[in-house]
Image (tube, rainbow, N blue to C red):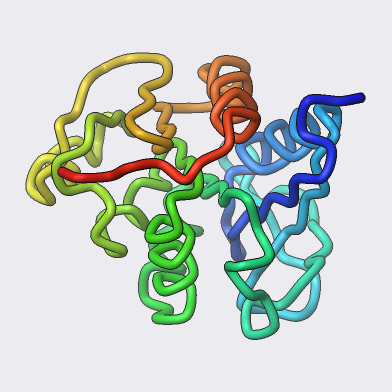
Length: 186
């Protein structure tokens, strides 16, 4: 039996997601036994960003408008500059993240993904990391930023960049396997 058998995880993304930051956690979660759904505001494929140019297409498993946060045991927020900047302008995306968090379920964000945590009100009072260029954003939102490969705080898992993906994925799997709900008094 795999560690995450019976668990379902959402990866919330849109065009411009960092290719490796969606694909590697998705693969690690699936290998651990989880069912993984790529959720997006779009109904068609979304296109990633790979290095300095557009990457490959990713099928959308479930449009955001049809996704119920109650159906998921965790949510993953890949980075890239474009992806979270677009998602944080979509109230339904912010509400999805906020609902997962409010239910005491793990929320994981990497690179620029913490922009979504800020928008959803999740960063306040939490230890976390991010891509260095948004450190000030995290701190201005009340987060306690640190320069570490992975930071976990009561079910919130954050990392800085694609180089941190192995540690990010491992910690995320641990958080989901531990279950919840997490107590989250700031």
